[in-house]
Length: 258
Image (tube, rainbow, N blue to C red):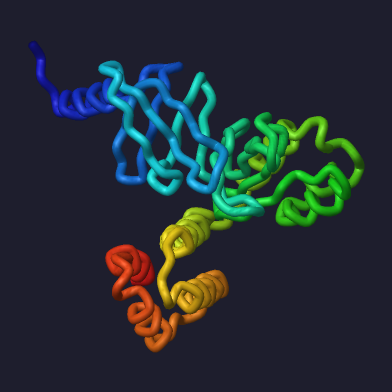
């Protein structure tokens, strides 16, 4: 058998392809980088949104929303997305720098809500009223697309074409989007860690709960504004949580600040 320098590369590629879930197969990709296959069932309702995956040997594994990076169920792909009322699982309808998602409107089982999400983290729920005004503002960095929206050529009835037009506009720009995206993703990761801690604090009862929630909210505001977190605020929060068992979660959130 002939052997060349390309052989290891080909073998690595084959191993990577073999490790991917089969087309049409349910799977879960975790935030730790694990890939799980089996029958996936999402629990979209209630305060603790989860994904349950049943393996071929009937073993069930439940993962919280913040442990999941992506999952596929019955051919549809879902991501945890921060909407107007916190994080929920949303169905990916169209991927790209600008992605189109569907979500469940409150107290409804159908995925009738629509959301636009840029790769830098900016989101906008597609409005029923004022579509031209609000979508034009959201996509203002592409004047040609905005012009087509204002003229009625691109509207809510042809969102797929609108998303494609915006993505083509962005692709043709010379701005270094990778740095912008990386910075925004880092900021989102920091806020996600503090949101997870906040939810755990809310689920518990202890004397300093109110103070702890107020301090976490203040830290999240400062992160959103890219402001420095003062040491006295961190130490005060440490003291509030020292007897709750949440110190590891706090240190994990603090680790995202480095």
